[in-house]
Length: 237
Image (cartoon, rainbow, N blue to C red):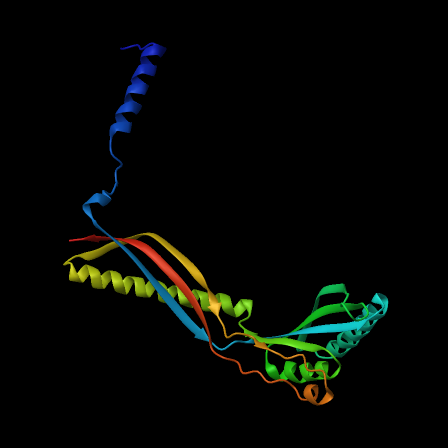
């Protein structure tokens, strides 16, 4: 029977750990034996927009700041009441500004301004209301079709799938031309590009009754969602 002291057991254990550390991993893969291929590809998916946004400006001028502000506040209150009767439209009241202007040869005056935006899923609900707001004195600054956040997530997934499919197609083509085959993909990264949408339609500052009586028009144009994919592909014989 053999007896070992604690110091001997420690030396044996340390020697065993050092020996095991020198051994290569059981399933280590030497990537240097493969041909490395760096590729990038893009994927696109198209869709009709499902959201229309109209941006308005309520504005009033007066030599008295309080009077200008009261006029803007009254107009915004009237618009809020009109919008509350239409469940298909969402109203957002945003920036408020009051500033003084001092012309060289004219009396000074104050300008009060507040911006509002209307959002709806279709033009049939929003455009007639936009015409009413113009008739009430609001200035329509822009009409912009866009894709809602929920729909955009689904479209982005499709764009990413298309980018990966294009990446695999390129890898197979290059591998075949070299007499090799694709072993696996490594270091895959995916990024998205901003949605390319038409420029918003800028509206003139028409204030006359004839110019603002009719509802504005806006055509929904197809929009594109893009995704990019990059990867290192390992090729083998």
